[in-house]
Image (cartoon, rainbow, N blue to C red; front, side, top):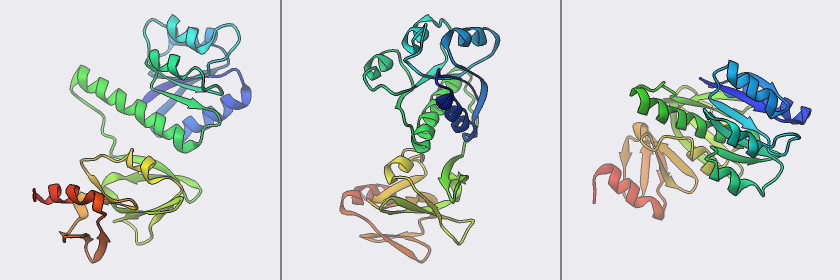
Length: 235
């Protein structure tokens, strides 16, 4: 679990940020405030792992606030201005989001922060918390999807069908194939063409130009044949 702090001087933006945070399973909102001065007091009293931060704020900007913090948590900028992106990355922020931010993009930034937290935990203790799932916006809800339950994923223009072992009906989600692929562990999944990602666990057989998951035949794209060859040990 990541303890997080939200900072934005615009009430509506802060409310939206709080709502997005509530939809991410591994985030716990410690506090929200409308200026960095108030945030400094909170940092003295609470353990904070991640701060969502606006840049243009009265009194102290987000950039100045980061520089003033001695024991630095992770930071994600959420701002209306693209021009500060380079300065933000120079300060080692996890991500730089430009308003308006879609929930899909927000979750991707949060996943990046979670992975960095996992790496830091592993480095310090050698122990990491299991996180074998992710949440995706589907069927008008944030649906929990376990990696081990995914058999294959099919791309259909602006939508994806996620075929699950636990359900005869695929999960339909409005997300790009690339955005979803970034969330999948490469040790478990393989892209076999532009419109298909398959679980290595559920592949039952392989032919020259096809992969089979039980009786389902999925064609392999020309640009992905080497990946299949490596999988079955043919070099």
